[in-house]
Length: 97
Picture (cartoon, rainbow, N blue to C red):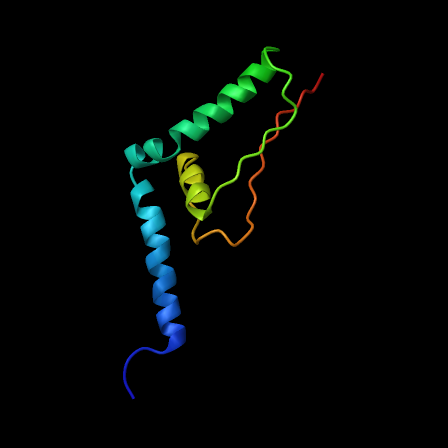
């Protein structure tokens, strides 16, 4: 009997995937590089609506687990595990008037 069991192998692969996806965002410079384009686009759209320069009602973005991890890291909220399949992140701009 030798080698790794299937469950141990899968656990090791999961750890490797998680660290490969999160380590680049451990430092602030990595977080800024990872999400600056998307973050700036999202903020620009929200600011335009807030300032009355746009009538946009809905925007949809699609990505992968790495996209979510990098964006959450940019918000200083790196997840402790890879987001599950079909994870969703919502942002809503509301008007209290």
